[in-house]
Image (cartoon, rainbow over all chains, first blue to last red; front, side, top):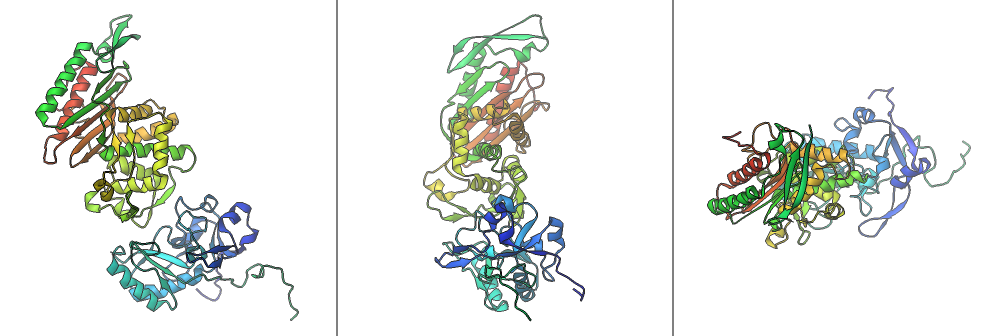
Amino acid sequence: MGEAYRFPLRIVDGLRLEKPIRDALLPARVVYDEDGLPRKLPRYFYEIPSWEHAMSTQLSDNFALWEFIQTDVREAAPLRAFPRYVPCAITLLALSLERFREAVDTFVHIAANGGYRSPRHAMSGPATPHSWGTAVNIYRIGDVFLDDRESIERYAAMARQSIPGAWTRPFGTSKGQTDDHLHVDLGYVLSMPRGAPEDHLGFNAERRAS
Amino acid sequence: MTIQAAFVGSDHDGTRLARVGGEMPSPLAQYNAAPRAEALDALHLRLDSLERKSGARSLAVAVYDTQTEVSFRRHADRWFHAASTIKVAILLGVYASIHHGWLLPHSRLHVRNRFHSAVDGQPFRVLADRDANSEVHESIGKMMRISELALHMIATSSNLATNLLLDLVGLDTVQRALDDLGVDGIDIRRGVEDERAFEHGINNRVSADGLVQLLRLIAEERAFSPELSREMLGILHAQEFRNGIPARLPRAVRVAHKTGEISTIAHDAGVVYPPNRKPYVIAILTEWSPEAAGRSATIAEVSHAVYELLTGTEVRGNG
């Protein structure tokens, strides 16, 4: 990524997207997490024009954009066609995962529906960091399928160690637990890169004279 | 060439009798004539004898011939554990969802091996070594198309594909599709490999009548639309387990079918396409003691006997 490199995806304001897309992304909307706490959803998104763009856009050395947008038929219908949208914080997630990748020193496989999924995805339920683009479900690391206590807890510890502040879902079969993948998230991070078209506070602030 | 059939009544456990006339003698007449009442009686006796000889606890047969409109029924309303024949009903539910526009055949679905018991919602998995298909297990974590999963569910009887599809469309969708199309004799209550449900007596049930009703709808292209019916039929034609209904039929005979087998159950139900005539629909349901052998051979023998009766031909050897 040399000096002339420019990130290839356009940033869009979710509030200015067409209504069917807005109704699925719920940009800047407040939703409630599993503990009943209010969480504000992302407003700014990268626009992905095509699957080819998703395939060719590297977010880090070992993670490409397509790995984070594999959602199935349970995703809201308007979001299953291109252009698609992913919260800007997805780049932070990819960089964090790169550290985890270095720690485990082998391939890290993100599950379908395990990267970004919208708040209207049938699996989303209460607010989940997956809808912020800051969570992944990892089902396989190298040749190891994460479907038992030993593998999930071992790699969860490595994730927390390699990604400061990361949260991992505990092993188990009860609500809020996991027994067939490793869930890692950075929390409800909102990202507004330079180039975001409007002020994120929700009003059109006048530019201050320099 | 004109073959005319006139139906004159019914007899013997709902069996309809037909008299066939024609303007001129036809070399195909033997394939088109309805079996005589004595022949149907003889089939009943033959199946009684086969049931005793094979050691089967129960043998139920239902047949509907679309050529002559003759039906044959033997314990056809008796309920059995459905085993994998329930997958035909789930196929119907999937295509109901496609028909309603909720799904597309090329829609993708996350392959995840985690399901909830019908008893108490406890999670369970489909064990790979108990599943006839490994391809779906190899896709865990990834996605597969609905059409691929439907094919695996039927052709290789993938339990994982079955539960994924049932999880997606829901029990209610499947049962409603059956009800809306007027199929009785199929009762779906859970996915497959749900051991806790099995222990609690919560099982899918079918009767031979129920399966024949369902397969008739598909064979006669009345399940949602001719196009969707043909797609379902195409999937049933891909069946890879052929040691039941097709085993003792001539090689030229195509069979679209679904088998089902667990410790005490062996079934096969499908649509049989003899050459030069319309197809017939058949369901052969059997129950056994767990140690019993000869299940597939018994089903094949029933199928063979029905084929000979309806086509008026004698099939020797292995076809």
